[in-house]
Image 1 (cartoon, one colour):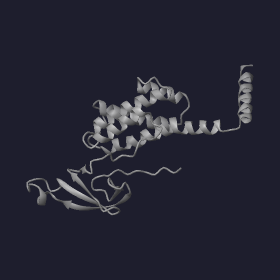
Image 2: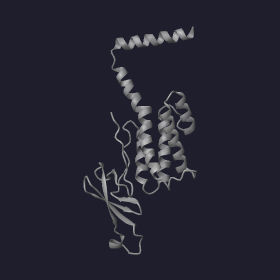
Image 3: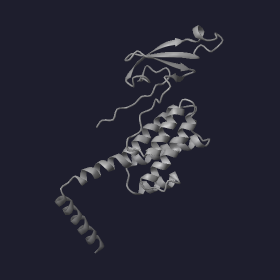
Image 4: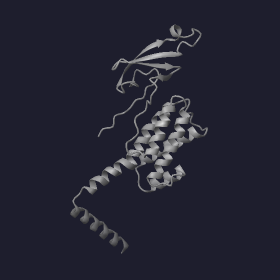
Length: 219
């Protein structure tokens, strides 16, 4: 199944997934409204609107931040994500427009719990990544885990990466959370389900083959 890329609403962009209809569509920008609706002493770009060319609904932006519609503007969490991690994922998405750093810190906590659910101890993220990498995950998954760890640490503690200055980095964390969930949980579940659907005779042959190989290795 082909994954559909989600492009979150971003101030000044010509195209993104509309916060109303969720469709990737062209956006028309109506310019500043501050001189008409608010005190004329406010900056010229204080309040701006964008109009979706698919559903024709308006979105309202204040100082470059989306304030209407007030909703989560990141992709939904993977269905196989543990419930506690889903809760943190959604909570993080709700506060993302207000504080990217706080949103990243919540995703870091979600990652810690996720790693605990797939073979880690759920206490030290760096140690859990090392343990999971040793079990044989591909390099892209390892890189995704480390990106989440580093960005999350920058949200929890001041670091070299300034998430408040580039909130788009935090947006990418949600996609990475879904990516690692897919690699560490979804794909394994799908493979195990398909294997369990094999005829019992074939599964017995495979078990016998693998048992024989293990005995030969001991000799």
